[in-house]
Length: 141
Image 1 (cartoon, rainbow, N blue to C red):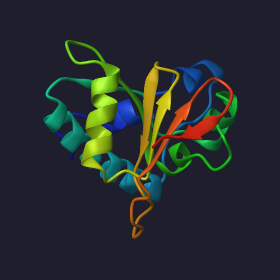
Image 2: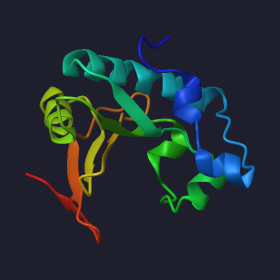
Image 3: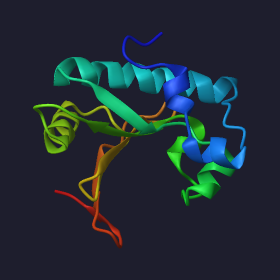
Image 4: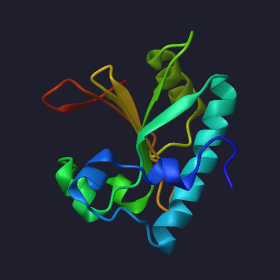
């Protein structure tokens, strides 16, 4: 189990509740959520202050309702949108994750949140770093 995160936190969706959409992961999705939580535990330890998950696992219905893409890693339980509060900024968190690596995809989302994903089971992390400028995703160097 995770030191800092819970399955409930990783599957919480206000949109799913409001629209009465089941957002329960299956066994495979839950396994990947546990891997994601383990990854986020390491990030939280290194960051030294709380990280809050604003969107973790999404069922097909929840993903469609929020306008998520059809191949979103949120559907597999492999991605989370995260924020932080306190002395260190969201940019500090982004830079730490980028430096530590181990992620499949890291996206700077309009200075509002960070999207981070882990690779599917058995795959190596791509280490893809992007930013969303409000219109399109652009690779960061």
